[in-house]
Image (cartoon, rainbow, N blue to C red; front, side, top):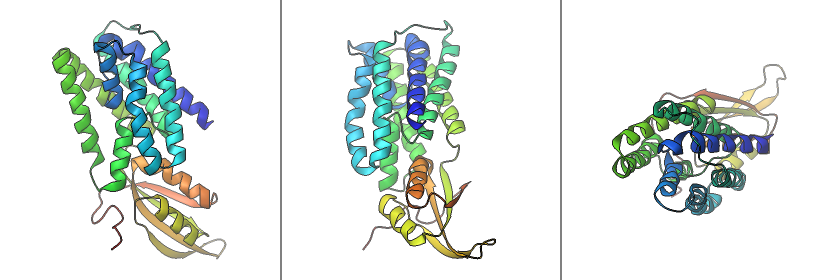
Length: 271
């Protein structure tokens, strides 16, 4: 089902690009937008540009973000790149505003499905996840800044109407992704498990976050349990869920929205 989800989500992104956004010179967010730009102003196909731009990021991500996530991302990037190469660029709607909104919504839907299948469509999301591993940096600000570059380039190369429609597309994409995946940047994870020490070691080895461990007793079973609590960014959610399942598929996991974090959000470096 996960592989099927990656295929469906990636194909939805292709439809949003080639049938709604590209025909009206409206760009998407991130490296996808830059790929579309290259496809519009050079003989290079958008799909080929998308693959070439994402390839080095996927190699770096493989070393930092883990094998499963990057392999799923590679599948998505290949499907999107191949789809952009073979699907003809045909406008479904003549109205530019409608195309920007629906193209952005379809892109967000596809990206959200890929996220839920423990992958990504590459691009700035990979950069955001790598940065979130290394520094306590507001990823939303970083991604917004990189997308702003796409918008400004669109304005100078085409016209400022196209740039504003690109902004609409990016905004709609972000809202739909948040609605499908998760709409909060920070999440608190509480894990109740009988394998506390194994879980602790596995999470600390693979996750760039600290955690707190407490002792507990099952109300029904009266058996000892460990309670592990950590705060993560939304980009790490699927990875953390997979890490938990690898150690204890029967663990009880509670995921809640976090309004604000004070103190160190990332694990302090050993001295």
